[in-house]
Length: 110
Image (cartoon, rainbow, N blue to C red; front, side, top):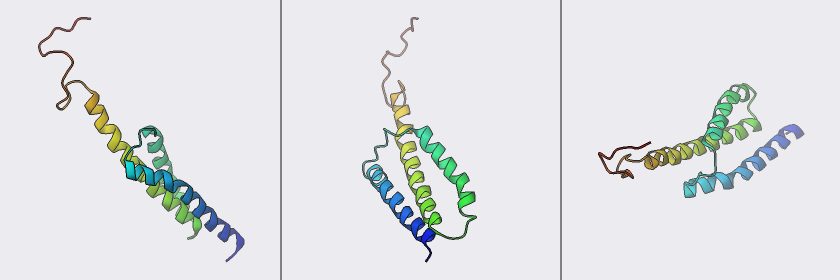
């Protein structure tokens, strides 16, 4: 095994290991409120486009690293969508069992 491939393997393991605590905590707590849904969505889009390049390369450490990023960012996206979608519905007055602050039939004054 040559030095660049070994360095790539070590770097892939270090990068993946550095991201594991974030992904593990998000999976365990389902709390991703501190993450931006837009940012996570952009990361996923960029990863999909970057996959075209990475998977055109010969099989190597970069495949492992990029595959990990694909899975980790997809997990974060699913958790973000799950967390942010219900919150918007629940905060809207009168939405799905959430009572409105004004009585029905009351006039709205501006």
